[in-house]
Image (cartoon, rainbow, N blue to C red; front, side, top):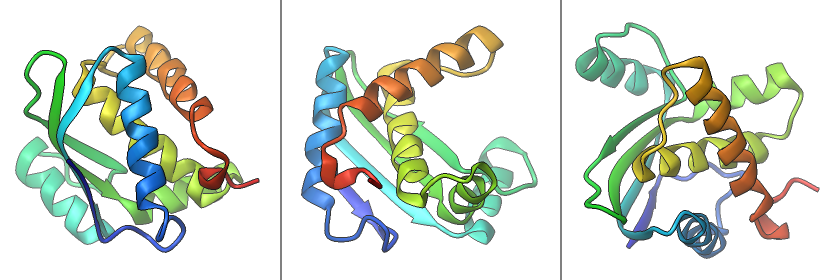
Amino acid sequence: MIQFLDLPNVLLGREEDLKNWLKDCAKSHESRIKNLVYHFIDNEEITARNVRHLEHNYATDIITFGYSEGRRVSGEVFIGYETVFENADDRSIPKEDELCRVIAHGLLHLIGFDDRSEEEKAEMRSEEENCLILRPKILRSN
């Protein structure tokens, strides 16, 4: 099961396409989604969660809590959509493209990828790009 709570308007109405895309991303990593919930929250709420769980007093684009068992992916992903949109504006890319990248990023964390070291960050970026390539046209900005 995949759920999207408070999905931003830029992807609203495309939930089934998002679910199918995420299933394809998981499958490409020999994983299967069991239970995955995406929460889209504002900067105030993501900052509060960041303080509470990670002791970081700032807004971030994503916080992931994994409950996966082997190749069965389960977890909750909190996406700070305001930060995602600010990052999209800073990079001059469409909001839906950056939002999809962050959605994939959360799934990749749950599959087992990390981004603490520079090497891990490079691998994560590469895997994000691989997931973005799998996106159906309806989830692309152009």
